Length: 81
Image 1: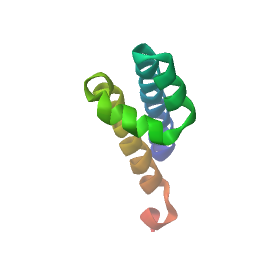
Image 2 (image 1 turned 30 degrees about the horizontal axis):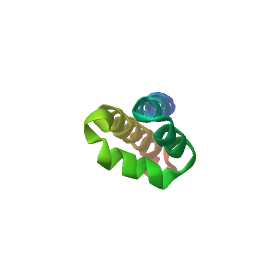
Image 3 (image 1 turned 60 degrees about the vertical axis):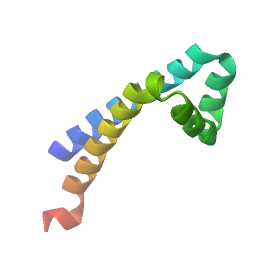
Image 4 (image 1 turned 90 degrees about the vertical axis):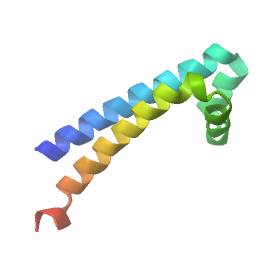
């Protein structure tokens, strides 16, 4: 049960961070926003070039990923044996 909650909460947090990241890209310019939305490498370039604007959304995504990984590890059959 705990693993399912961690997976769900982590996924929602990652989604919120991703939406914040796309919104930040569109605030800089429409071209950045479309690039981040449709091309993954552009997102990395945007993150590096606009670290001050993107830091919070990136860290939120990392926090959500940590919860998802924790939930996956708690729910795995290897962890329960």
